[in-house]
Amino acid sequence: MSRAQAFFQRHPAIRDALLWALPAIAFGFALRALLLAYQPYAFWSSDAESYYAFAHRLVTEGIASIPQKRRYLYPILVLPVKLLPGAPLQWIALLQHAMGLLTIIPLAYAVRKIFVGWKWWVVPATALYAGLPVILWYEHELLSEAFFFASIVWTFAAWTAWCGRLQRGDRAPIVWWICFGCLALCVLTKPAARFLWPGLLVGMVYVRAWRFLRWPQWLACAALFGVMLTVGEPGQAARLLYSSAFPLTVLDSPRHADLKAEIAPMVRASRARLDYYYLEDDGPKHFLRGDYREGNFPAWQALDKKDIKALNRAMRDMALEALFTQPHLFVYIAVQRAVGSLNWTEFKLNRFEPTYQSANLRDAYDSWAKKGETRKLSQFASAYGVTSPAGSPPPFSDIQSRVEPAGREVPARWLAQYVQTVTPWGTFVADPETGDFKRTLWQLTPTLLGWWLIVGCVFAWALPWLRGTLGVWLIVAIGYAVTVHLLGSGSARFFAAAWPPLLLALFAPLDGLYALIARRFSSK
Image 1 (spheres, rainbow, N blue to C red):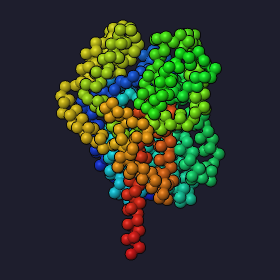
Image 2: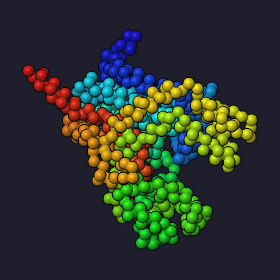
Image 3: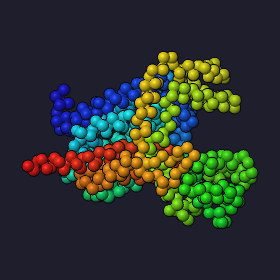
Image 4: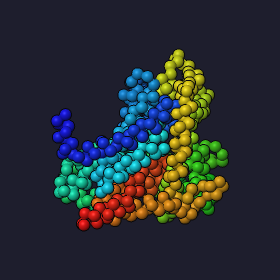
């Protein structure tokens, strides 16, 4: 006990973070308990198999193979969960929600270190994060998002601690290594972590990191950057990149002219509605994902059958050609998607409905059964803890009875009321779509809350005590939110990683006012 007291005396910010995080932890626990009461299993999404396959095949077949698309960390973390008694998806839901609650502590620490009037802001700031529907849900899926979001918050908090030590003239190598370790968790979890680097480089320049870092630290950064390049699947990256650049395809170029000729009508149609492409990119995205195998696209089909890698390279070539020809329009599409994903209303709340899992899983199950994909059915059933005789998949009713437990109406109704109440309050710009009306980027005018967020971002750089921490991480967050949409459609899921610094930016103007008032009173 005396050692703990001595530790907290040396590190009062950690003590305060633990204490002041408790209200948000209690609030977040209540929400997660409601969700688990009527959806006790993590959701098996369309991407779940690629995360689960490594653990399942290693345990059942003795084959160790991580899909290139899902390197490295999360599939490995699923392995010990697979070895636990009971259903892996039930454990994943419990463990990811527990991790989400623990992540409130480093966020509270960041508030404690960043703001002058932190006692006023720490409870509402952490409660906002704990109750954000998009964060709550992705802790409930077999996806790497929950771990990715958490590792970003931990990196943010560690950066805040490091900057605080730098201001006192301390190089703080141990704190820096903690920050580096948290960043490594991000990088080794999702390829999207590479979009954090531009903002972090700005931060390193701002704090003049070369004055404090030594060669082992620079070498570690270079090694991590090199490892980052091995994360992700080149073929998928090519498809995603070209789905963004699709309306900018240079049709009069001779490069891959046969492929371009077959998609020219689609390209012209997308280009004619470029201002709405961020709302209408499903057609090109599905085409590049494989819809070209149907219809009159002989050149695409021939290259697909002959060499799929060559087709992926062709998509990459056409994307880069379009990007370098009209880079401003390529960035314009990314900004469209990022701004269009800003509102909390863009997150589909039907995920919280009690029948959501069974309704979505039934189609996948029937498709696998019809195609005789026994391996997928085996993985799917084992994730839900359902066993059946070898060679015969369990009836879907066995799984449905697990994801739809009896007596779930009350917690489902309470959580539905919560998410339906708080979601409209997260409207930062005019909704991209209202009925049949679609808005261009220039029509997405900020709401009062949106203007407040803009003012908060300005204050984060205007106020000197916020600049090196919150100011830097707003550049990290905004840079991530824009660049991640260079390779993907607009999505609340992609945008969610940017929310921790953005939520804190809402309190920056209030902290400036608080500091001004406190200074006036202290001078009297």
